[in-house]
Image (cartoon, rainbow, N blue to C red; front, side, top):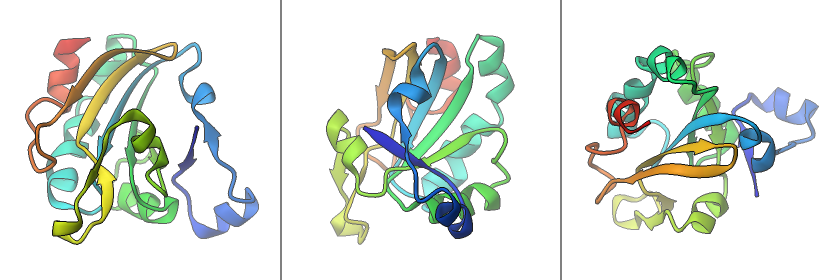
Length: 156
């Protein structure tokens, strides 16, 4: 499995649309990764991502090497969203353009009723050298009760 790093269209052309294998993302690293239903959506933009951007330093003080946000969108939309939120450089953003990453984890959900199609559930995880140590999944994608940054700090 691989993800697409957030980037501009020109960067995509230059990289020949390369992807980043999960083994490269998690090997020998302590990573907090969280999934959002979609870029520019309400709870994701107003709550989920900000709960991590404001807590990056606290997570790093607990030995976390990187904080990653992944959503079912193309890498160009994810890049624009990260820039709009002033989160680039604090959080790494990756796109799951076809939902395959989330489907492989059993974390996909059908949000067609909200006109979004196949998306991700709202979730967060702490991964230590490729092993999931903590996994928090919201009961419904519109909630932010267990997958936020503050909860992850307490869970690590």
